[in-house]
Image 1 (cartoon, rainbow, N blue to C red):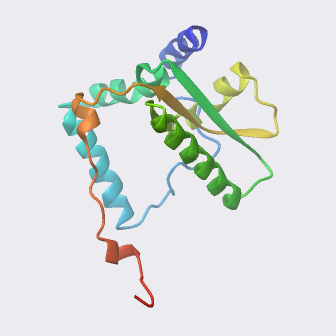
Image 2: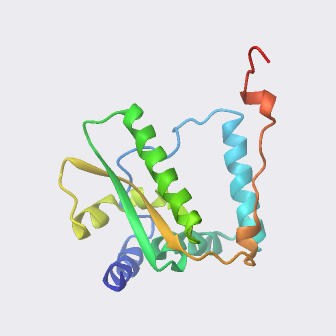
Length: 169
């Protein structure tokens, strides 16, 4: 972990924006209401730590904490065979959720980090991943600080009737 963190610190100095991603983390032309919700979530997150919208250096510094796993002592990386499609990506998400729930059951906190997709070459070389595997994301595992303002954020939720249809109730 120490070796990987040192590598990432160097890589971030060389390429602050990363290497790019092999896939779109968000759809390129995200429509409403998702675009506004995503924007508001980001604004609310940075507001908890007192970082203004126009303070780009502070925003980038906060985002760069992803690449130190937010100080967590353990990390996982998830990859998927390149021949798999969107249906199997959902399986990876469910697998990750199970790990997160098991971690919580054992008193650990977790943070899934799709930000790692921007460093797929570096991560792939370090692990090493075979060429047929694509890095999906990382996950920090450790002990969260519930008193930290950023961990107090509870994002807005759409009302249930906006996305659920109950039939026969």
